[in-house]
Image 1 (tube, rainbow, N blue to C red):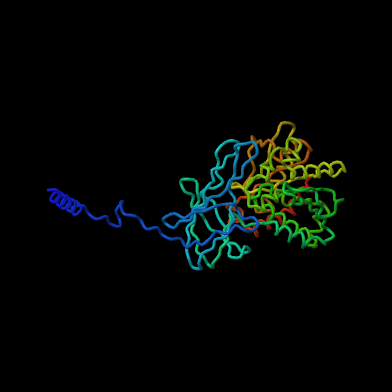
Image 2: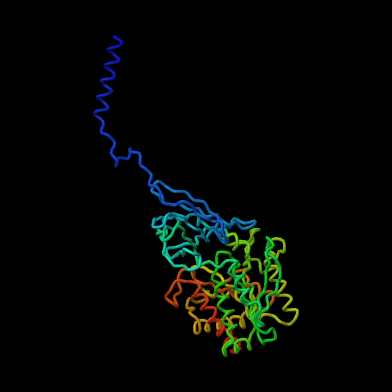
Length: 414
C-alpha cells in the first residue's frame, strides 16, 4: 500500500510539472546572464586623480562613485571633480555612469551637474577632446566611450596639475620681468608663492588668484595665457607693463589639486569663505598666507588696485558682491571693468544682480577690510557663448591674453 502511494504521488508530480510551461529566456522567472564589461581597471594612481570606487551591473554598465569633500563644522559637502584613467582592450566600448552629485551648499541640496555638463577624453593626458553627457533622473551623468587605445583618461575639464604649474614657473623663472616669491605653505606643507610679472614700481597693481577650489582649472589656464602675453616683449606688452604690474597666486588649493579633490582644503575649509574676518592660520593657512602678503603690500604703500579671483561654474558670470556701505565708486569701477570685458574679450555672460551679496567671499572681504576693488570671475565650465565653443585650455589662455588689454584700458579710464 505504501509503495502504491509513493508511485501515485510521483505520477501526480510529473503531471503537474508537465502542465507548467517552461521558463523562456524572456520570462521574468528566467535567470539573466550578466553581460560582461570590457573594463579591466580604473587607474587613479596619478596626480589630480579623483578618489572613487566602481562596480559593474548585470548589463555591463560601469557605475563610478565619487567621494565627497566635507566642509569643517558644517553639513556642506561637494563632489564635482572627476579625473581617472580607464584601462580596457583597444576597440572596446564602455558605458559609464558617474554618481554622487548630491551636494549640500549653505545647508541646502544642490547639484554640480545638468543637461549641459560636458566631459573631456584623452589618450595621453595632453591632447583632450570634448564629449557631451546625459543627466539621469537620479542626478547621475551617463556617457559612452570607445577605447581608441588600451587606456583613456577621462576628466571633468581639461586638467591643470601641479606639474603644469611647475613647468610654467621653470620656463619663466629666469626672465628679468619675473619674481617668484614664497609666501607660506598649505595644510600638507606645499609651498605657496606669488608670481610678480613686471616692474613693482609701475603705477598700478593687479592681484589675481586661481584654484581656491581644486576642481576649477580654468583660472590656471587664464593666468598662464596672461603671463606669457605680458612676457611677449612686443610693443603692446611693453605698453601694458608700463601701466601696471601683475601679482598672481597661481594655485591656492595645491593639496586639493594634487589629491583630486573638489572644493575644500585638507582641513575642510573653503578658501573662498571667511574673508570677512582674519584668516585662521591653523585650518586655512593658504588664506593666511595671502592675507599676510596683502597686508605687507598695504604697509609698503602698494595696495592692489584691482583683484580678481578665478573660478569655474555653469554660469560664467562676473560676481560683483554688494556688502553694506558706500559702494558708489566700487560699482562704478566694476561697471567699467565689465564693459571692457565685453569689448575686448570673449566674455558675454553678464554680472550678478543688484541684490547679490556673498558674505565672506574674497571679493567682498577684500573690499570691506582693505578697500581693494575685488570681484570673482566665474568661467563657464560647459560652453563659451562668445566663441560658440566648448571651454578648453586654448580658449581660456586666449581670455588671459585678452585681459592684458582690458587691464590697460581699465587703468587708463581712471
